Length: 503
Image (cartoon, rainbow, N blue to C red; front, top):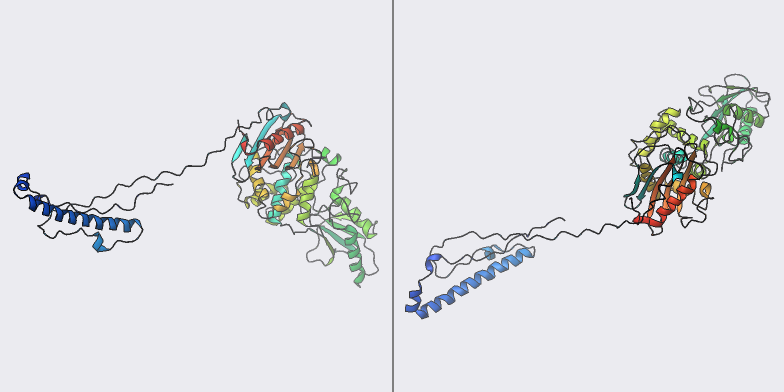
């Protein structure tokens, strides 16, 4: 069911040093010559030494110049010439062999020895899928079937909210309008998809548009027109055509409506179709559109007016309009209270805005398309609804950790979502959890609960200062105790931080 209380590279030497050419071989004399003319040999040796040293100096100067990054003058590069010459035999200047430069030493990899063994195999978790990622580096630290798509329960509301912020934008407001009908005495109440419209002026939804205000505008415009002044409104057409198709997703359990956790998905309704407008959990009706019409008739003082569903005439004159609270208000509300109907509205409006359809089936195109705008690979997603009530949704835990990195970094308009998430032991559907845990106040996440699983996904500000993103799915034969097991595991993530071991 829904959640009643969830919330180097190597471098070569650039050049070798220039070396003086060796003296020609035929100038060398045999040893007997030295014995016959010792003084001449001394003199010749001195001359040769000078020549040799001079050449070396020139060569060294050229090498220094090259090493310093400049270009040595041509005369410095040329081999020196002896004062007494024969035709020399030239040999090539040898090239210096490059000396290898040591590779840069890589930073040591983190030693991850902090284990959550035992916590991740708690039988209360049932079939467990999980992922933990370092939000700064993007590294996946912990993997339990992390790339397997599975049902998310109400964590799906994070995807719907992120999509709405991307496509609609935080300032978008949803209209509800009244226009003249095609028959005498007739008005048309046109829903724009706003399920938060307040039948009595205010309700559980913060900043909701007021139905009595809309009725007052309508009556004033009706009376101001000489053609209708003084005549009663006898017919009200209810136009909910902004959404189409099934109003109850076929894979949902109908008891969610009777238990008060979700309404039908319609383009026109008031108070999220609650019997008690200010209650989070409240019985819903069998016909949300009809209920909205009845509330409008009462606000108009036209309780005898005939109510029928239809479509507004093209180009009909407007009599009144009210606007919902902005998306920036609705997103935190849907997340903190885990409001199924509000999440469905946001998801469906994304599909309408993208022009891909206006029924449940359109969501499988709309939501992935919207999320791909954040640079995410959405190919593994299966989206059946916007609230997460269906077992047929498929989202991998690893995908959620990537999305939460974007949320943590406040990319695009995702700061609205980041600030709207429940906090463990503090707010929303997590207010009653993590009370005695050292992770209290450091788990910022969305909860999820349906009959076949409990889920939690979000951000952990770990004890070592590392920010982690995580997702834990406890699926199949699980009960309410799965929440405590999830919280214990996430507390383990908090205590381990970047030292979290995958084994």
